[in-house]
Amino acid sequence: MSNGLAESELQLLSNEIVRNFERRVAAIPEHLCAPLHTEARQLEAELLLFYKFVALAVRKEEDLDRTAKAWAAVVRACDESAQRLHGLAQRHPDCGADVYYDRVLDLRNKCRRLQEMHS
Image (cartoon, rainbow, N blue to C red):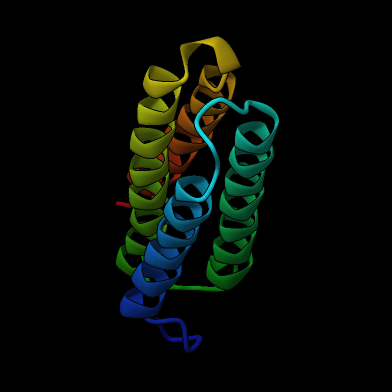
């Protein structure tokens, strides 16, 4: 990106968000719901921060293709996160983690619209 934000850097941030979530969730005993909610909220918060970061980064971007690619990186991060949250909800059906899955999908759809708008 012309403002110094590269597509590869966005991918690194996205990967780090998902990797950290997986690492933290793996350390939680399976019978506990509260820590799972904490981690799911943390994942959601990190995705929202990533969204805000990209929104600020592309605000003055003149190249629509670069802007679309930046939004695509957020869409991929949401897809990866939603996949992890869905698995979490499947493994722990009594914990209610599906609410976070739904919110991540809402963010994903918003970013997908932004991506399409700039394509």
